[in-house]
Amino acid sequence: MSVTAEHIGATRAHRPTITSLRVRLKPAHRSGGLVQGAWWPGSTRLADELPSLLAALSLRSGSVDQVLYHQSDWSPTPSRIKHQDGEVTLDASQASPNAITLFGPQLEKVTLLVVPPYTDASDAYTAMTTAASVGDASTPDELLTVSDCSAEDRHRALIALHRWECEGGAVLAPPTNTAG
Image 1 (cartoon, rainbow, N blue to C red):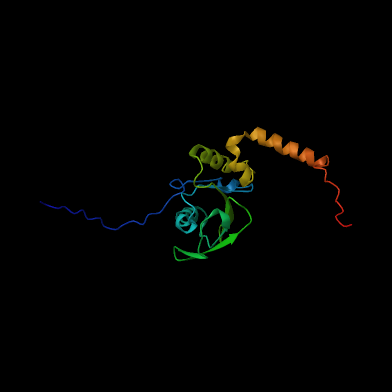
Image 2 (image 1 turned 90 degrees about the vertical axis):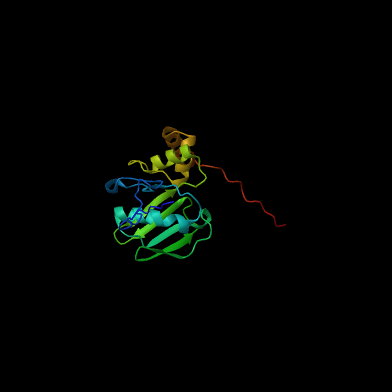
């Protein structure tokens, strides 16, 4: 029995690209709105999922040194992870569910919609595509329900809500006197 060995000179480091991740970004020069794109991680383990996102974003926008995430969206996470030649600080918050914000020297601030890992593929695709649309200014909550209604329906709902609030909104019941 003979064994052949293949010699591979230098092993190239695996460098994920934006297209190999489940991430979509608005064009860099037109990244307005509440989110600048969307990310659909494979699990709720942020420390496991984040390195490939950081590597891909650093190719486009420079290094990331801080990540702000919604604590309830992820399993327990360390306060720092090693990335490239440094460390990235991970800060938990109760603000902004279904979003992650990344900061860096050249990056400044990028906020991404986080599509939960258990989301149906077609719903995730719709939310991610909408979030990466140049003219989109939807909130993360709106983006995650985008497959349930059309953009026109969402626009009409916002107009109706605004009209309702301008016309007095809900009528509050007068306080009841419990003393006496």
